[in-house]
Image (tube, rainbow, N blue to C red; front, top):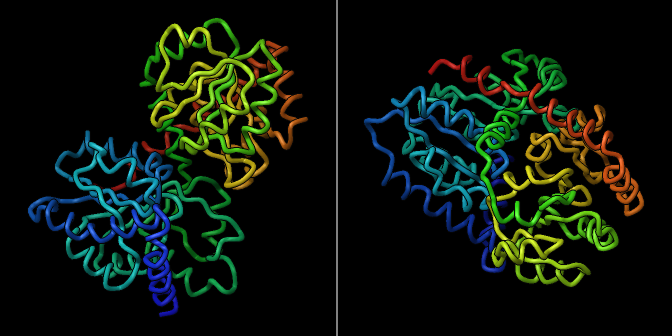
Length: 406
């Protein structure tokens, strides 16, 4: 009861701020359309497998499973839901799913309507998604639910004294495919043993991306013979470290792909640069060859661009938390990250093994870059560690897929 009341209040708050916040408005508008989408597109004679991802990162973790299901079990249709606009708005036209929509707020009325219209045969919830009313309703309807690439920590609400009642939601899951042994042990403390340590499906996804990486002639024309740092998903605090160093080191080039691609932010970046630059949307082979900094002012290219770097910087570590480290490491390049990385298993593993390097300020960033640029053996060894780590941790998708009874 308390949970549902809190959900109603949260939903009301989102509606109230939606006229002033674009993300909230997209969520409200999208959820209003969900039931219309389901009525229009769900065919009662078909069998649907439901995949739910909070946002874009979780979608990428679920994607290897969706694509294999599509190949090997064409008798099933795929329903894909998102909670966040940053996932839905980017992937609403994803061709690997038959129906894509927002997941309405987890209120009892929404849950009844959603499941009545969608009628999934089974459900896959990716990583952190544990919606109390949806999962209890699935259990009552005998809909198998699989938690994929989930990861648990001691400080999560499930393992706190005040979260005892909410932790019952974990018993609604048919099987957990967790990322690590710690997660299995924490669940065992709750008496939950339907658990397999499968690893993270994201490793499979980045290997697929690496194998299918686009050839980008304009980026190649920009690179020429220079050593290139590819800085992906950067925020202003990241750029405040990277750009001054780049300005002072003509022996290197920089590809900068900011997380926020707005005109104001792009102009802010350009105002800090002291060497020739060009935006990707305006680049030609001639201007690429003249530029020292290539600014990626669009989406969808970063995962292929990392292949053109000798080293990578993955942003977010001075604020929201680091972004996708495996997306860069898969190309066998050392990866620099900021200090907010403790919740990211792959970053912690790579820091221990040496494929990742943490920078905490301009001084540590400068020293690390100096070493990478001047010591070829060090650069190659760190990159080799990063690439081998990704290869070694792949295979979760196969294990999960082979364990589920379709």
